[in-house]
Length: 349
Image 1 (cartoon, helix red, strand yellow):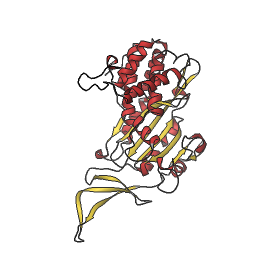
Image 2 (tube, one colour):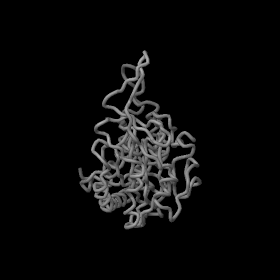
Image 3 (cartoon, helix red, strand yellow):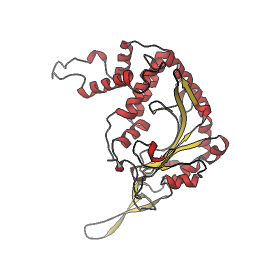
Image 4 (cartoon, helix red, strand yellow):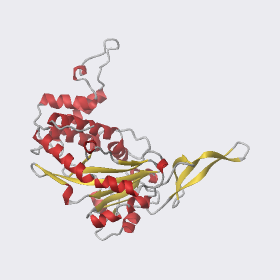
């Protein structure tokens, strides 16, 4: 498990409420009440800076040459390379900046930083803050969901710096982004090519979280009230997976091979199992409802889906990256749209 977090300095680059005992990976320092942002930065292993340096290479005859227009991005504590970037356009958004953004909001809004850390040797850095009691949704049967906001950046070109309103369903740790399109505003996203971290743009996006949360909660309430049949559930999962139900069990007329692969069928079965037996599946607002369908998909994407470990970081980190911004995130977005459609909730374009 140790390779699944950033261990560049010999210890896990993560700090979280409850410490190592509260984490699936068993690593991390505890964020305590009264910790300053400097304390959290240090505990999370983010007390380093990224820099750019020219890319050079040595030819076969021993001559050292430079490669114009491209720099290597490296961290100053270990000297390890994090990625490459354009000399002229790429602006580094430092790990400390990601933590420091929350300073004013921690004082004025009563937020608390829940976790902070780095993945992929420091290539991806994030901070997750709890939005407090005003961002809590309590569904039937004590189905408790808490609102959060995540600010993240990367140094390998894999993602822009972005601020994302999200939520965690307590009974199963499912994560879902807040509804953004209904407010006419997407999440804040800033390319590294567009200059220094835009604190004003970040603050403006932060100010929209209240509206996004209310819209999201209204949608959940409608989904919890919408009862669904077994046939509707089957069609829902097929639709999320991009499978025509009529193709299940059918073979290609030319090759004789099944039209729907065994892998796809296993995925459908995993979704159905999560719908019937997953954490929280039997709560009143989830059992045989559109909300239960949505949470079956989010549980699958967050905790069970098989994903490609492109960077060699381990299945948990690969699945986390997928659930945040990859195929898992896209699957959850489709599920939310289809569940809202079942519940008669219109998500504005």
